[in-house]
Image (cartoon, rainbow, N blue to C red; front, top):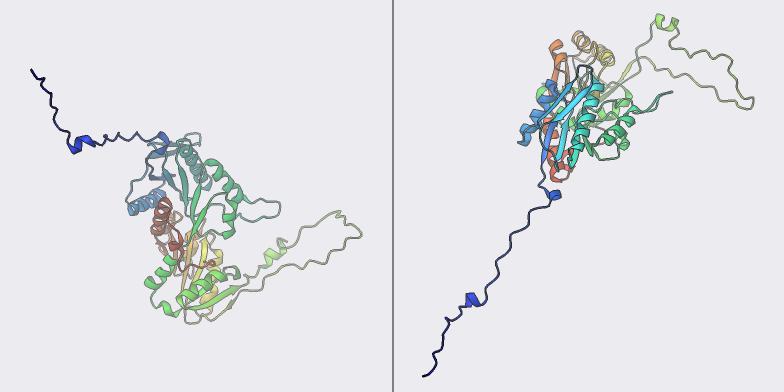
Length: 385
């Protein structure tokens, strides 16, 4: 009897050349976690929180959860209430009147974020403190350089600031510094808020501010005036000897060393170089702190025929009796940005107006996080701004 053959079903093409099923991808490594960015406020003052909220609203982000407070013994304590591991962190810090407390808040928050393994820590400091102490004085120190070293040691990797008092300050840092400009916002205010601004003249209250004033005048196509000199001293000032050099007793000079006679530096009386008669005078500068020089300049401009006087600056510190002096002076309006909190001063002096610069700060944050060029923020900007 013949044997029966066991027939197997034919192999289909799909079964003959079956592709092995792909294995699932391994979980990402711990150091390859998805990164993002967060924005924190470095102090709990209303002005800083308001600026931080304006920035986060423009970015469509939420303000980071943190607590910054002063203990009963005066020490600053910072608590980060969420994970920041592997993220870009931006710290908004405005500088109120208590400068040293604000500096410590920034340092401690940066160090706390560094300890919490943040990827990059970028300080957004619209007004950089101690920027006036950026040059060596007699038996003094360059405090601004010290602060730059402290910020780097605390963990900051980048800084966004605005209108540094001296642009050379950027060389004090060992990491990148983006020095933004407020001039586009102030120029826009002049064009939109000052009636008949075509009849205005840009004024530099000293020869040192002439380059900034020239930059404004050229872009607005206006005239330029410069104030030179200072108010003359009273007889009482001359009598008490405050303008005379100190007496040197028992000074010994090497017999072979004969230095030329040093001429004393004296400024002439205040004069105005330029025509301001029948014009609107707009004084421009970077910082308004002690306003005596601005008040004196306004009086001179009024005597020369200017019928309206504006003072415009980026940083309105307005310390001491500045609001009262402005209110009693010939200045019609003082325009500053919100780089420095000045709400109390505005309540004391209605002449103070504020320009919001949160737009350029938020755009700088977005571009830095996305690795985009910052050149767009500096278009039509000159080095003299």
